[in-house]
Image 1 (cartoon, rainbow, N blue to C red):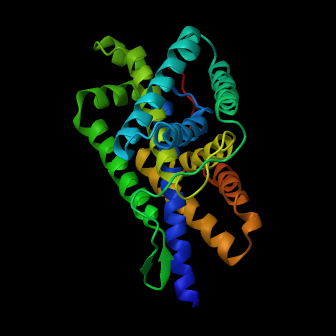
Image 2 (cartoon, one colour):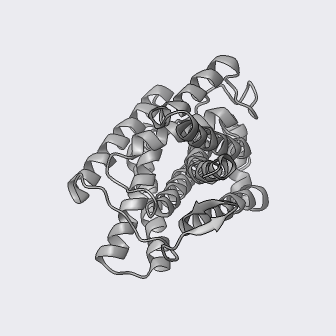
Length: 297
């Protein structure tokens, strides 16, 4: 394979990885904007999305589209329940306490998944057949186009939600000034509940679309969370556009590094990017100094 074809192959692989990291980063960003909390259970929502999708399609034989929608709904409900049972009762707790609660939730979700599905990895058939597609000398799996397309739709839908709907604008208002939002009649607690539900739904989408090209297992969540968090920090915590751009940057860097240098460095690249950004510009590429300061809702 010529170098140019290899680079195209690595580029599409990077865009695919970047799509997943962007969705995970959006989940982090959504909760951070509403609460100031770093949700360390975000990776587990991705894991649950993949495994529940496998259960619905492979075990219950539910049609793909219905299974996808059910998966998103179930994980969204789990995210909302987690907020009601774990976060809301400690609304007067310190920010560090709330973040530690999300870590405990991550461990709990992982343990439940191991109990239900065991330690074996699970896969899904691709959404539209398994025949590879040739593009500019590169060989691409059809699922890559599904991942890129669904990610684009998710990002577009989130943009519409925040910019064109009253609920989205209310959530944005809570992120800027929760006290002022309360004074004008916005129920901040409901906005927090919604942020957890939506972030879980985004994670479920990521898990469902990536499982056909990479096996899903109970312990995949922490690594995905680290890379998604790295993208969120790189883009600027609280900045959705920055999170998406940063997710693609990390995905492409990871793919190029693994292909041109060594696959052994693949998982270290996100951590390296995170360390460099925290050192050089803690607010991220599109974040402000104010946004880099943790706030309590």
